[in-house]
Amino acid sequence: MSARIPRVTLANLRPAPGSQHKQKRVGRGQGSGYGGTAGRGANGQKSRSGPGVRAGFEGGQTPITKLFPKRGFINQNSKTWAPVNLDRLQHWIDQGRLASSPEKPITARELLLSGCVHDVHDGIKILGDGAQHFKTPIYIKTSRASKSAIEAIESNGGKIVCQYYNSLALRDCVKGRTDRISAAPTRREDIVWYGKYRNRGYISPGTLQALGDLPFVEDRWKSLSTQLGAWKKQEFDVQKKK
Image (cartoon, rainbow, N blue to C red):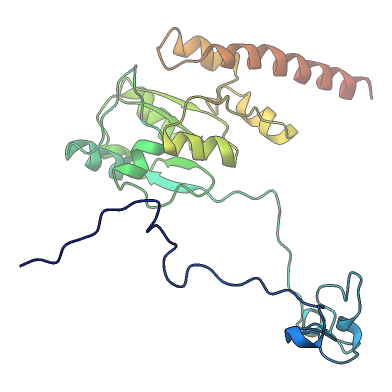
């Protein structure tokens, strides 16, 4: 005979055992057990009130951050791209693990979910290795692409566009979120790179003209092309006067 489980009511509700602890109230006299020095010990720099010692301070001796030699430098603006070669892309398409259409192009999300890449890093870069095996017309949005990869994709009747992603926009792309507006490039190098047709940049007038009215082309790309194109022209005029 199974044991009878009592009915849950407000009378027998209680927290799970061990989930609650008594508040530790310090500085309330010797009888509390935490009076006097209130757990800070006797004297010493850290027993006083105030901000205390700074992070990394080791009492005056040479801190460990200065003991180790420094070599080289870290470029804060460098990017780590996840490379995808055309022969790997074709193999995934042949297996039915990747598909594209004008309404739903291949993005970093599809490449990650299909296992074609294991980490998107700072974005996807399409490379031209194995171009002789590539034969499928595809529609793809990526962060970067090599010249040989662009030629191979377009020679087979496909379309490729390189779009700028910051860390938040790339995360939204991978998660499939469409409720937020993607950030526009702010660094001069990024504006110039994504504004060139040879790179198939998404704010290049030549790229937008070549893509035409494909469903995945966003209206915001056209406005960014106009705004950033005017900025580039103004920058060119300033340099020309110098």
